[in-house]
Amino acid sequence: MIPALTMSNKWTNPPIDKKAKDSLWKNSQYFIEVLGEPREEGNELIFPLKDLPFSGFKIRYDIERKFLGRIYAMVIEAKFVQRKMFHASGRIELRYSGFFKKGKPFFRTIPLKKGSSDEDGVLKLLNGDQRLIQECSKLDIEYLRLFIDSREEVWKVEVKPYGGSLIHMMLPPMRYNVILIKNQAELILSIMKNIEQCNSGC
Image (cartoon, rainbow, N blue to C red):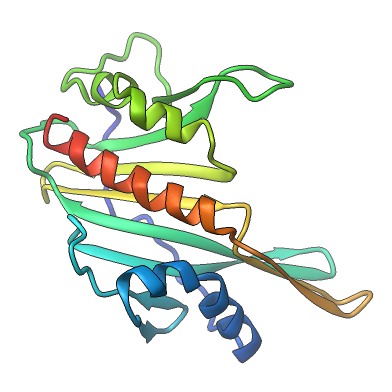
């Protein structure tokens, strides 16, 4: 059984400054070219959906405070309506086999409980989609998380890439932008679409 979890897991970020907003727009350029001009709401860019099979698509900066600095970390989020009847709600994450070397990607429920079962077959759908798994093997990310809320009949995918962030150091005083390269942006959007297809039973 997928462990129960509500969708209201988002914490509120303090407002980001102009340089951070400029970085967010710059690193979102691929999505702007594909989807069109977003509207700005706080720390988020809300995108038009065009032909996307989503009910929402947005990009934001989460602020991570570090010793003598901070990181504005990009998080890309897609939300879509649950199309296949699933009974369980919870959180699923993308993981990789291997310890020292990145191995084969696979999805698993979080937290992982002994004796837990995939009663709705969600993991089987995700892990059985070879195209999805192959694309995930090329990702350069900190995490990919899938939140399922069967009561609200909504799925939400969040991806935090290594690229796309802004690093602000106080000593020495400097800022540098970590570019989200085009092929990673393309992969992320394609993977989100493939997960949405699995939502309907692949």
